[in-house]
Length: 612
Image (cartoon, rainbow, N blue to C red):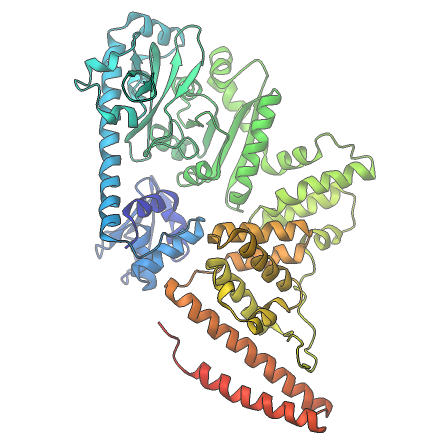
């Protein structure tokens, strides 16, 4: 059994629109997308996919469910296979399938705990809203910032009163551990032995901004001081329901506006989001005191194909833009638009829209810098492109950024752009950054003398070696279970496979078995150390493989794969011996008999069913 908490986490990261659109042609229609149902024959579309609910439904045949259900029904996968396939797509590792009853019970308890925490947070949010209504000082502050009661209600704004324990009036049991676990209360053990624990509210005399999940649950708070004080902004701590690196303030409230306006606007503060909404620009979201992450982008692209980042024009804003650019590159497909808006250093979106109005701000959005130009500016920053050294440094900076992008027309055009900036001839940069068009393969095997290693040739051998690398990434501990001949067979291959298997052996010796993601990171780092473009290219292909459906089969599949490699090596050696006429000497004849016996044995083994 896969823990329910993992399933919930997986579904929060997977975009059902991307999953379904691989198999069904979808068209936008309002808030949802529609297409012909893949589960029954129809001429008029009755199949809809909801990006906000992450759910599909057919009004014709009644089929419905989430991304996992779609994979099982459409592809005929088992539940576990569907989970593993989707997890691989978003870079997650599925926990061990063999969950004990105690662990299963614990997972269920964690799920219930999360629901309980959101209930506690929702109750606090309601209490803060009531406090706002009775606080003239807090109301005057919001009015002074140009906010109306309608906008305050839309975002559920509230007020945390002064004092150490205002929450005690909302929660009769102020000692309830849930208040501390949800981040609402801080408990300090003065003596360190539990004899003198002081409990007090985390948020005091602050405007409260409830942070909601995509589903609308309150999962945390942002809080701003009314007057002077430090810190100016204060967030909820990390909790079982709240992670700053994965949540965006205003996403729940701004979903409809994103679809209506055709893009999402990413800003840096809660007040920016609320002030823009007050001015009629309701499609803004804010990061929560962190740089923009891949998880943020993944969530945004569920609702729109266009994202505009808004930053201050000062050095800090430029640094934040660079981090946002790096997070965006893996998501920069040909169908998406990513742009960067820089305001004057003395302004943020809140102050700019209040001074110049919404129309002027929207003009700024229209003039936002496209990703292609921002990438070139970032790579060229500080380099004199009139010198060979400056252009070389610019290209060195640009290469890892460009490599992070998905394949497509945009990536090809950026390659042409950097070719021009680097003043290179057409095709030169492609050769430098992409390597040869075809990955070099090992040369034709020479006759194998005793104690020598087999080196395999041809595309089929490369495919088998690719798979061997992938299996050992999944379970690196299997390398230690292989015998010396298997080590020789794998580690003796030509580049880049000798680098991969050598890295796996070294990592196992230095660190012990690694998780798949960690093992893949080790291999990528090793390829980077060697500045090996071919090794990196092959790894990108291998990383796209699907994990085996049952981990108990990995060892059996690896053993079967090794036999296939041995058989291919044997047949290559036999073929070469007879083609060159080198099988006439007594030693060669003995060797050929040995090879023929081995060939027959391997064929028999490969004809048997793969163990489950």
